[in-house]
Amino acid sequence: MADREQRLTWRGTAAQWDRRLFDAVARRHWPAAERALPALGRAADHGVLWGGIAAGLTVLGSARTRKAALRAAASLALASATVNTVGKWSVRRPRPLLEGVPLVRRPAVQPWTTSFPSGHSASAFAFAAGLALESPAWGAVVAPVAASVAFSRVYTGVHYPSDVAAGALLGVAAGLTVRELARGARRARAVPGDERPAAGVPALPDGAGLTVVVNTGAGTAGDAVLGVLRDRLPRAEVVECGGEELEAELAAAAARAEVLGVCGGDGTVNAAATAALRAGVPLAVFPGGTLNHFALDLGLTGPEDTCRAVTEGQAVRVAVGRFTPAGATGPTEGDGGDGSGYFLNTFSFGVYPQLLRHRLRWAPRIGGGPAALAAAWRVLRAERPVRLTLAGRPRSAWLLFAGNGTYHGTGPTPRRRDGLGEGLLDLRLVHGGGRPGPRLLAAALAGPLTRSPAHTAVRLRRLRIEDIPPGTPFAYDGEYAKAPPALVLDSLPDALPVYRPR
Image 1 (cartoon, rainbow, N blue to C red):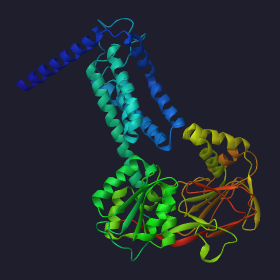
Image 2: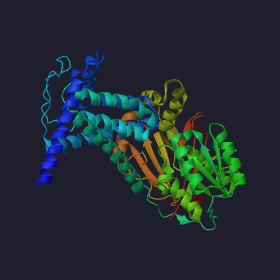
Image 3: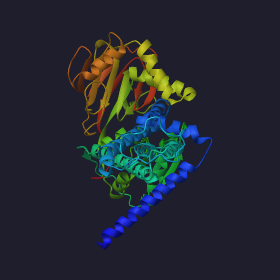
């Protein structure tokens, strides 16, 4: 009985303090806030404010910023669903009485739902937390806006301070939950395939003999990898560079190291793999890019996985795709001196290389997001199919895609691979004719490895491409180049030893 009375006394005291804080805010007069805070609260109704910010970041931001905006929107959705399905109907707290709140602040229509917790505060802090956990800089920009929206709920008289505090905590929890769900999905995706073990690769318990080239363009991801490296492999040599110096540093590191390590995105990993193949040394990949397709398909979820594999000397052999000008033969193939090279993920002609070409040209002037939209508009309006001769047969193609190994997913666009040891090229062709947009959509709806008027998909080890129009671009692992008159694509099984834990 005494415990019950004590709990009731505590609740009464808390409610009194809640009302006192509410009244203190109601009596407070900030001339600049009288109209600004109510307007900000209305802008956040139904998540409109946050949806606008997410859309702006998606259009104008980098790939990492777009990922952060998506994470923030998912956090908001989770917080909103939790508040409206559990929070509001569990507590059923009445709204505050508006005594003392100036009329200019009050909403035109009083909310009809219960008061605890504040849905606006939950959405605001969920969006800010989701954004900050992926992009701290943008999170710092949005956080004051989120705090202002939350405060406006007390300022306009529709919530008690404790409603706002509970909503804010729920929103932060939603952001953390979405981050963990994303990590779990990433770990679930990164399932090692059936690649053949690589015998004879060295075990480097303290990192001696390992040289890791870190692409400084990796930003905060590169910083995180450096911290893990210094802790787990203290004797490893670390070289930080970027831009035009990267390929030269990778070649020099491969020439002097027992094992070549690399931290960066898929394009950086491609350059490192090329250097490792030329030097005949194993490769250690420390995921440090935005998407990390190769690392995830290999089964690496983070730098800790790679450190463990290097320490224990565990590695597998993966297949590598190669493109070679048709006139090149013998030992020069793949050495880059004749225009040949390798791809770990994908190779393509047609729409995608054109998109990449325009985006790379316009991005320095107008930013990555607008450049991508402008490039898509330009390509889908003005480009024409590429006319090629494939395996001796003339073809007209909107897109020719070759994957290093079989990709899952229908249509011409790759998703993921179960393994990297298959030694086959996954060839997908979107036939020319009509406009590119409808053709690409029709191909996307076609099943895998089927033949249709829009799309063909086959698996093969080698493909000869001839009669390539002069100046035709091609793309490989996100890089861009001009094609020679004829090319040979082939797969090199078990070509590259790469560290991966069992």
